[in-house]
Length: 210
Image (tube, rainbow, N blue to C red; front, side, top):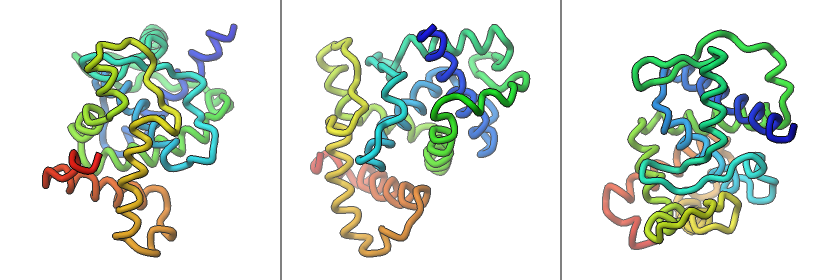
């Protein structure tokens, strides 16, 4: 029963991702993008809310693969959604299928995660699909597992290498932004933060700071 409940929660997360992506003009996604969006969302939650419990940590146990972060439970959930026609395949892309019932809104932590997906996907939409990949492959927690051929879970809680490096950059970012950093909502804060990060990547400065 616990496994079924877990898959139902992941179903809700995946459908949330597709609904929000539709709103920003992404009518379909590659399967690997689903893994990456949920992974990035889970890591960034600990970064933005260090004093809160990460709502993703209970359900996700990502491991490394050459294509990106992977977890068997998302694979199971995607299969479940396709079989029940809540998602449909269009070539190598996936898109929303038939409507789900409103009961999905009653899943534990659904609204909290939905709101956070809105923030993260808003940011990813600004920079495009390639920025998702760029962020993932530079993720130090991910890179360490990949380079050592490790199949252990990727730590998505605060205190991991990715979190620590994001915080280092956060300190210099907030100094540059000044007092206005405290006045930004989540979307604007992450928008400015990633503009800062990606500008440093383009200038070749990021690796020297991590």
